Amino acid sequence: MRRAVCSIANRKSQIGNGRRADNLKYSASIGLEVHVQLKTKSKIFCGCRNEFGGEPNSFVCPICLGYPGSLPAVNEDAIRRTVLTGLMLGSRIGEYSKFDRKSYFYPDMPKNYQISQYDKPLCIGGKVEIDVDGRTKVVGITRIHLEEDVGKNMHFETSSGIDFNRAGTPLMEIVSEPDMESADEAFAFLLALKQILVYGDISDCNLEQGNMRCDVNCSVRPEGQKELGTKTEIKNMNTFKGVHRALKYEIQRQIDELTKGGKIVQETRRWDDELGATTSMRSKEYAHDYRYFPEPDLMPVVISREQVEAWRKQLPELPQARHERFVKQYGIPEYDAGVLVADKAVADYYEATAKLCGNFKAVSNWVMTDTLRMLTEKGMDIRDIKVAPKALAALIQLVDDKTLNMPTAREVYAILFEKGGDPAAMVKEKGLAQVSDSGAIEAVVDQAIAANPKSVDDYKAGKVAALQFLVGQVMRLSKGKANPPMAMEMLKKKLG
Ligand SMILES: [Zn+2]
Image 1: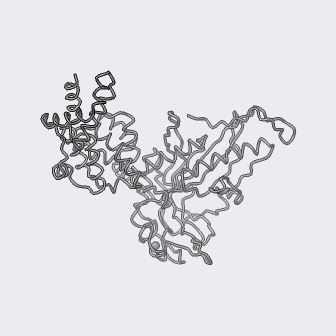
Image 2: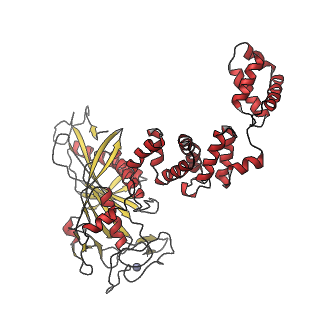
Image 3: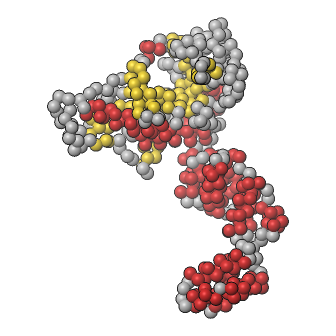
């Protein structure tokens, strides 16, 4: 694991009061507050559709618009998904939980408070395991609570508007302990968390649609010092890469500031992606600034142990467990399992195909190479692929029983990828089957020998590469249909 110890040894600069900063090393502490939109059908406190991309203000009602006198009611599925997340992260599920009002004076929340949870969150504690540079590290989770998302400010050339479709989307906030020590660790944490949430079907975690956003807390302190340094917060980061870049910048900025003899001010900063820098936004709010008080319109949430156990039964297999099972059940290498399991939809596709095809390694080879490459080239999601698991299984079967050689199989795959269909029918229709009939191959081999006397001489003179060239010619003359090992054997025999 890469320790975030940023060495400033050998720095020659003098610091403010004349002390030298030579050989001082700093450690960083990073905590994340990750906001995740839950994929419930309806919003958290009303029956409006919870959907991305509708006409502005088309999924709204008096409750999510914050009209006075409207009454919220909790969506049970939002509670269930939050509890499931807690169970996946090993949290304790609070038996008694409640909602609070958090003062919030911005136009995207006209009722001037956000319904959130303050001292009684749904889930307490937990952990996420991350891998950085080949080592595993545990990052603690402080709490997970539930709140409502706000509307979205939209700015046009001469006016501004607010789209309230997003207002009232169930928003789960996962707060980590300040256990991460580098930008790499924070990045790994976000990736691991996203993977778990997608596996659990908690959220789509689509970053482009703002399903997952985070606030980043960061401080540095001289190595060896126990208490944490003064932290700054970078708000509203919506890409993992942005978090990584912002942290790299912010850690170095704080170290530079301290090295100069300056002080870190507790404040909220904004990451400017184009500038590649964080800039001061406002002084940090403290909990008392939010003037939390219990939400009088909502009953406390009491979840029985029986209910928690019933929900626990809905837990899916998590990525780590699936990885281990793939290695064991399908006998594929660790590396393959890692690539396949990284994306749940890819793992599902692999498994659906493997179940139809006994050649498990061949399936993983196809998926890891041609499938993933073509999906990336086309910018497609595997859920939209036209090659059905049944078709890929059939194609592998055609290769295994030597009806197709690999180059032809890959051509067939490319057609399947474009149009879908049944590979066996395609082979029949286009006459693609490999020619393994020795008489037919012999005729082509003779042609290749007659047409390439120089290569024949080269091979006879001991140049092995000439044989490969002649096999290539046989393949070309047979339009790719000759069985390559048979062609090679025959060439060897004829050339002595
Ligand atoms: Zn509504």
